[in-house]
Length: 108
Ligand SMILES: Cc1cc2nc3c(=O)[nH]c(=O)nc-3n(C[C@H](O)[C@H](O)[C@H](O)COP(=O)(O)OP(=O)(O)OC[C@H]3O[C@@H](n4cnc5c(N)ncnc54)[C@H](O)[C@@H]3O)c2cc1C
Image 1 (cartoon, rainbow, N blue to C red):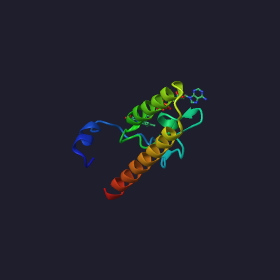
Image 2: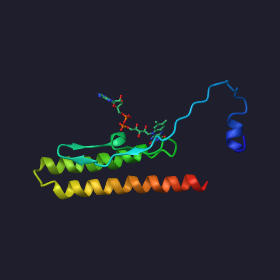
Image 3: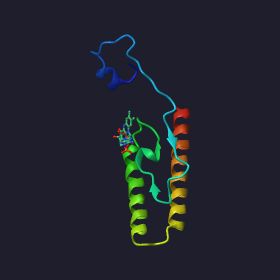
């Protein structure tokens, strides 16, 4: 009720006793994102936060990179360095995103 928009939205709402649900510790991320014959995309790779809503962005990032790996594989290119780069980039990105987000939440 302290937020003007939220207050307006729920002005006519009725409180339903017991209708409050919560979850915690939803975030996770894999330690490896691609390897011999597999590449993780979307929530299979990681899940960060349902409210800040980065899910679709990460689907785009992971699917684009997965397509590049598959394309290289189909053109018989050696995948070693590309796989290593993929794993480092996604592992660093998810870790940084999560760390930054935790900082923001802690500071507000
Ligand atoms: C409450 C909530 C709110 C969210 N809000 C947003 C938002 O506003 N914006 C945003 O960008 N993202 C949001 N997200 C995140 C977003 O929903 C996910 O990142 C996205 O749906 C992930 O897509 P996905 O295809 O990777 O996985 P999913 O959407 O989970 O799709 C996986 C599919 O595989 C199926 N499946 C599982 N196991 C098997 C099996 N063995 N065989 C066959 N099929 C199987 C499942 O039934 C499911 O249909 C939200 C998430 C939650 C939980």
